Length: 335
Image (cartoon, rainbow, N blue to C red; front, top):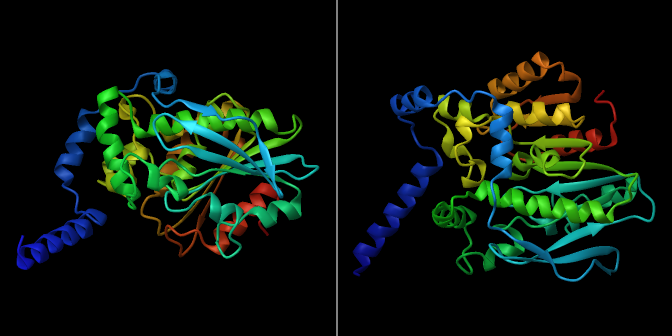
């Protein structure tokens, strides 16, 4: 290939990457998609069926929890993704445990080891005597380099390649991530004090999966979802399906359930859900938030829900957002 052709090829790649980050939707097509979606009927049954679909991910703990300095670690082997460590800080006495689910470009090291990171939570948990659990999602942090294609740095490329092959097995990245989350929550539940309340905190990608965590068999007292609030119907109506990765989309979800159904179900179980997002976050919609509130109000479950839209904030884990999350964890007033 000549230098001219290489330059032209690089230009096309950059041009397409820029277009993909902010595409202009063909609203006629999105409107047609909205019209042809079927009525979900009893959405609770659709949600149940989606959660019951068999996954191909199999996680197996390699040995038992080990303590190194002030941190516990459990090695886990995965058949579909790379192996990983489930990491924990456990104080001698505690009555609350946090599971933190990071975003796609963050990871366990940020939460546990890096005081300079906005996501660093260990010092807060030390101060408040709260147990803390975290691990890398399959396509982030230390696990990314050993995913489907070794040493690939782009999580979006890896998401695409996994999604391409998972359709051959009748599953999706969303479903396989849920399978790993289910396993980790079960292992955490075995370890924590029986009297400790369990809170799942998620940011961005992690926030999306935090909504489903109470439905996976482990008792969850509270969910704090930051930077993720979009119903499937709004994503279609606004022509904004590109704002979330492949992980966001379960097979046949538009005909099975939506985000308001999920939160209504967890509220019925007694779990309190808290949603935070910035008013300039293009992946979160006030209309989706209103849809959730309407469903909860109709079912007399609004008391188990709290939301806050932060002014002048985009899809960024700001200091203000972190402080709001810490207040929700410790149940402090917002005043």
